[in-house]
Amino acid sequence: MHEGTLLLEKADGIAVITINNPAVMNALTVASYQLLEQMLDGLESDSSVGVVLLTGAGEKAFVAGGDIRYLESLDVEAARAMALLAHRVYDRIEAFPKPVIAVINGYALGAGCELAMACDLRIAAETARLGQPEVKLGIIPGFGGTQRLARLVGKGRAKELIFTGEMVDAQDALRIGLINRVVPADRLMPEARALAAKMLDKSSSAIRIAKEAIEFGLEMDVARACRYEAELFGLCFATADAREGLKAFVEKRPPRFTRG
Image (tube, helix red, strand yellow):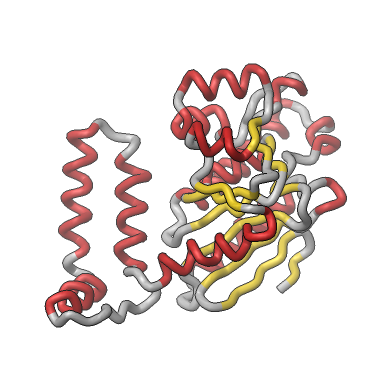
């Protein structure tokens, strides 16, 4: 399926969304965000899809940032509106009930790094470079970068990366916890699909509930988060997947979960 600057392919339980604007290194536009939001709406209700992979077209860039020429034209209100749109889409990814994996094939800078951080997991080619270089343009990361980066790598490292605007290579990104895995560039998509496949035969309802526990629990103090986890743990026992998974274990056979 082709929708302008975004491509969507679905096969074997995996949806691949490709940011397809290589002339500007897959820079994101208002139209890109709107289309991505529409695609996510469709994929959420698509029971044939269990995992979403998000990547960039070509070999140079995942997403090299926002459209600078467009940003140059913005006034205060328009800039705030674009930031709120990006936040809405990135929050949508973070709360999406199915796993979303960023497949980082090159530069992930500015809005692109922020997009990757909104995903559940990040797997990167060894040639990838990540960073928040906004201070070099006289602005700050405005699409979640000041918040998600600090939560992933710690406040000190986040401040260093944001204040200097410097990029880190894939190995350094792995070392500081910004990404989960580094693989050879020619193995990136096969490895991403293999990682997704490890989730497809698991309980989709359990993954959805676990994601909810992690995302919302991190905003609470530990005691309240653990009580929230206990509530969600109890709710699992109302699902068909829990009945099937526990019964299959007792009967010493593989469980037969239904995707949904």
